Length: 130
Image (cartoon, rainbow, N blue to C red):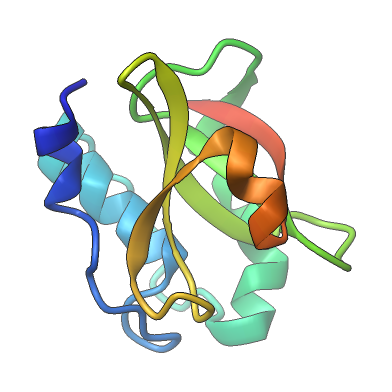
């Protein structure tokens, strides 16, 4: 994957009610990979939605130990026990990256996977779309 293909999805404004991490994942899948990821029409938003994101992803993806560009990344925020944050995996410039959006940054950003713990996130797992 080329960085130029992914950069257009950075700095998109985060909004808990209209554009959260799951919305970013669905947008990237549609626009970059041609996949239609249908989120439940009445999925929970905000803190309740974050708590449910791991369960919501199960019908769409299967766990993988060798992530590829476009795979789902589920993350656990510091102090939490379950995944409550989602992103998209990319391998760019010989390194693993996660594209994600949250309230802490206020927009979508690229993080090196190895730097996620410094940001208060740890990887729960990588998931291949079915």
